[in-house]
Amino acid sequence: MKIEHLPATASPADIHTILARDGCVVIDHVLSDDVMEKILSEMAPFREAAAPGADDFDGFNTRRTGSLVMRSPASHAVIMQPTILAVADLALAHATNYQLHCTQLIEVGPGSESQMIHRDQWAFDFFQFPVGFDATFATMWALTDFTEENGATRVIPDSHKLANDLKYELKDTVPAEMKKGSVLIYTGSLYHGAGSNSTGDSRIGLIVHYSLAWLRQEENQYIGTPNEVLKSLPEDLLRLMGYSKGAYSLGFYDAGRDPIAAVRPELEREADVMPELNLQSSD
Image (tube, rainbow, N blue to C red; front, side, top):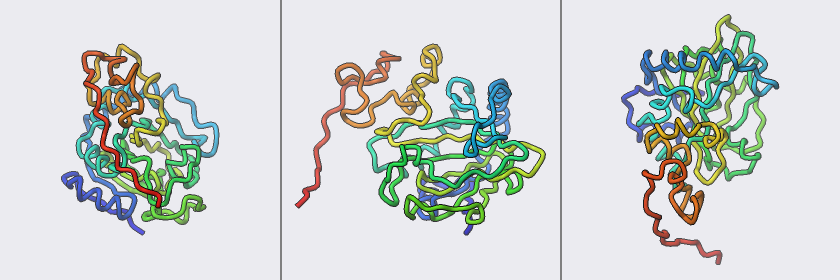
């Protein structure tokens, strides 16, 4: 098993081809040092205040800090990274719309044990999605180097095509080693988990996950971002956060209005036209 690496200049189509084949791919050297340092600086007080995990899954020596839309303006460029969104357009094209699912800084501290191997889309109450169906699209950005020794994310390439109830151990995985500024992209159905950290330094990653817009978000963007911040955000980020309809008649505001009108009425668009139905016959 190996994880394919592509350069930052790779096209969305080429990235998606590898993602569809393997369930994961690393894009090397995407973020600049300036952006990463700014995110770490903005998140520093929240990282310091964050409590370690309370169970094996979250990690007793791992600290997680969310609400990056509110807390880190520098993270907005990562959330809205054009190539990533273009790949998400392809990976989640089986739905009308998708949304920002979760933003979280994850600091795997020294002595951290490896995480249970899992699928991200088990978060949806362990619903049995059909084999090969992806409800989420995940990115893990390396804000420090990711090595096998410091707890790089462990993945099982090609496992996104397998059954939903399989059990795996660390020995079944490979580490997604990558340099600072690189990003691991993987599907919601890929089996993976954080590795163990046997070094004296923390491994810091930034996860930005996207999900189909007809599903509930893992991180509640509506209560996580106050009105004063919402007033300053660009329309495309607001809509990605969930201030747009998930489908023709899903997630509207008032009597079918554009949901963005609830927080930024000047951005409201006219109501959608009912799409032509293309229902399959059961005969």
